Image 1 (cartoon, rainbow, N blue to C red):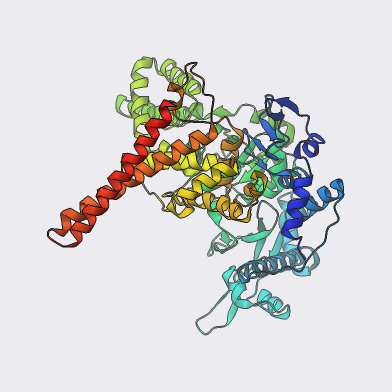
Image 2 (cartoon, rainbow, N blue to C red):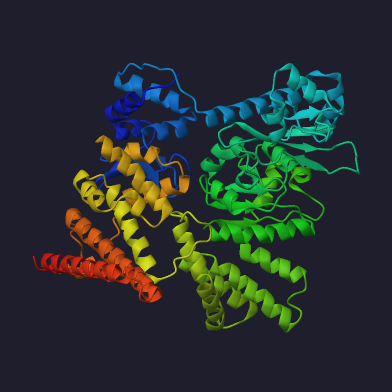
Length: 622
């Protein structure tokens, strides 16, 4: 059953987002918008903005945002249908459901989720309700993991044997090929299926919204001839590089405290959570990835890295620091005493002592320095210079200029070096990172091709103008939207992500129903959605040339005139590109008759360009 699309829109347009949100958040008027302290993370200065005109909200701190449905879903941890029902009741609209047509792809995904749920129940039942599970129950008791916590995290047990789950799956009419895709079973050359998880304790892995997407299995009986951990392979519902273990259980506490503790393993996280330290996530024993950091950034930008005290753990900490800094995290690192890990430490010393030790976490620069000291890198000039350059390199990843300057001063004082000397090294790294920084800016608006590059100034100007056009489109002024689409269609955009955004507006424009709250929910890519929310609720950014046209130095924006100007600039660049492409063809064709056609086309294009430029000059003089 589903709610008809027109009913969803009727309910949304009948509700005032300011009235709904002000029930939960104290809002005050500022300009056209309302602001308040974000309910999704701790802050002292309001960065949570609600637009009554556009009927959307956005937090410039934690990047939460969307329409009124999204607010209720995030605030109350409820489903979309529940959010629609609640608002429908508040505005007095009766809901009518209709039969839902499920796509084959969606149906296949749901089948995979159902198999994982079945498997999770199977493993859990083995742990709690079978005599064979006693050995696993004893192990968890030895590790001091209480039954209540075992149930919260859905822990389970896979007994020894080659066909226990195969038989269970067959009895429950599971498609065994799908179970194989999920890594629950495998098959021999002869085609006979067998269990993949045997003699292991099981850790279900959840998506951020609580669906079982994979499993991790750990040996626990001293087996030496087999891998300690066995994890599900990647599938259409599980991408390891985009998954953080424990996030589903910890996300609310992370938002509340505006801080996350990053650990390595399942047991580290579970032990901390059991003792009341609940703002914790795990990288699941693998190197931290960019995608995992982006996922975490939805909930906080503050992280304490807490890896094992051994050499491998320290190296993993250093690798993680760079990835976190690149994505604007405030990073500190906690080193536990030698031989301790988070699991053993909190079980021995308890929550209070752990939190006291947590306060001693060093900022990333202090941690790196202590590591280089332990490695003896400051004992001769060559390795000392190498170590200091690494410290400056890390500081270069910090985008805040003031913080970066303070870090350079700290390095200067620590090693008794002139700040100017270190600033020279810093500038080398900043220059070296410039292309990366440009790509980071573009990352929100990724071009469809990985590692694609803007190869000339014309491309750069086109991308800049396409961003301006997207900004104008999402202002939802139908006169301006019409002017843009009369000349430029979504498929004309050179940047594929910007083209995707333009297509969303274009489709609604053709239906005669363009409003920002509805458009926002149609953007599936979270980075693109955050980009649109930022440009929509942030201050309008227009080119410096417009400042020059204002005698006061302040822009009094005429949106229609600005739209016309942007469209003309875009047309002029496109004409120049076509002329250049034709000239290249002419040079290669020699005496081919096609040359005359290309020359005529260029003449027409030059006339079109001249007319556009005359019109632009006339507009300037008005």
